Image 1 (tube, rainbow, N blue to C red):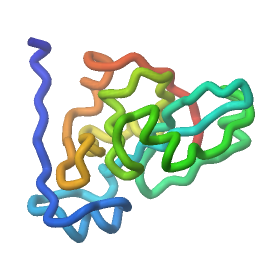
Image 2 (cartoon, one colour):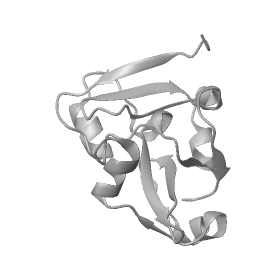
Image 3 (cartoon, helix red, strand yellow):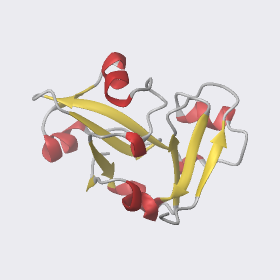
Length: 140
C-alpha cells in the first residue's frame, strides 16, 4: 500500500552481531548499512528503542541529554517489550518510542533485524517515516 521497496536477507545461522550478519548472510550485505536496535529503560520504567549503525556505540551522555538516564534492558525485558530475543529486534514492530541516530540518515539503504534471527530486512532509509514514528537525535 505504501510503495516501500524492501528485501528479505536470509541468514544461514542465528545472527546477534554485525559480524554474524556478515558471516551468515546468504546475499550481498554492506557492513556500513547494518543497523542495530537496542532497548533501554529509563528511571521512570519506560522503555525506548535506540536505532543506530551497527558499527557505532551508544553515547550515554548524548542519550541522557535526549531522554534522561537509561540502562540497557535485560534480555528478559527485551523479550517482554519486543516479543523477541535480543539480536532479532525489529524496529518496525515496536510500540515504544524509537530514537534513530542522525548518522543512520547518511545511508541510502539500511538493513536490520526482522524479528527472526535467521532473516534481516533491507530498505531505503527515506521510507522509515512511512512505517514508524520516531525521533531523530545524535545518540552515538
